[in-house]
Amino acid sequence: MRVAIVAESFLPNMNGVTNSVLRVLEHLDRTGHDAMVIAPDTVGSDTSAATEHEGVQVVRVPAVMVPKVSSLPVGLPQPRLTTAVRTFAPDVVHLASPFLLGAGGVAVAKRLAIPTVAVYQTDVAGFAESYGLGVTSRAA
Image 1 (cartoon, rainbow, N blue to C red):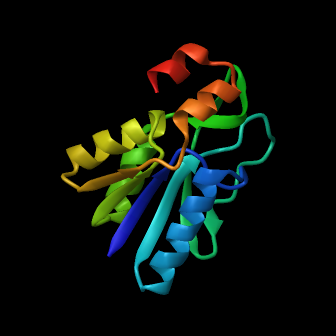
Image 2 (image 1 turned 120 degrees about the vertical axis):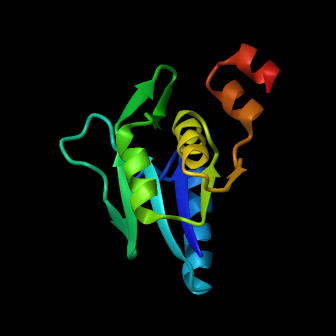
Image 3 (image 1 turned 45 degrees about the vertical axis):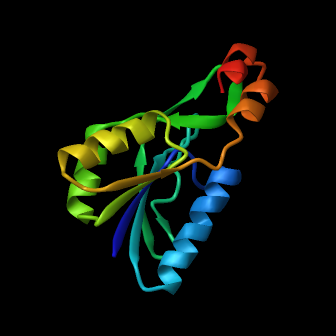
């Protein structure tokens, strides 16, 4: 099986989402499946983040920093998202904690008639509370 993982966070940022994606990649490799990752690039650095992780292609999309959430670049859906998914030709698109980039991943998968699965590894209410986004935490 070929799995395209659209991750809202990935190396070099280490957090719960990244850790979960790394475990999924290990499992896919161990069980003989092919994977690729689409993830935000680094922000405010002269160099881009790695485009390969242990033999897995990592396609980077431009990212921006969001006020109050200085530790997490937010990936922006770009045409290269469509190109990457079409070229890789996955059997499924796996959305890891989908937000903006994940919304782009859903749109691409729908346009290309590829099944999707989404997982959230984030305590949304806790995340919102820790960044002082009280209104958001109540909605979560």
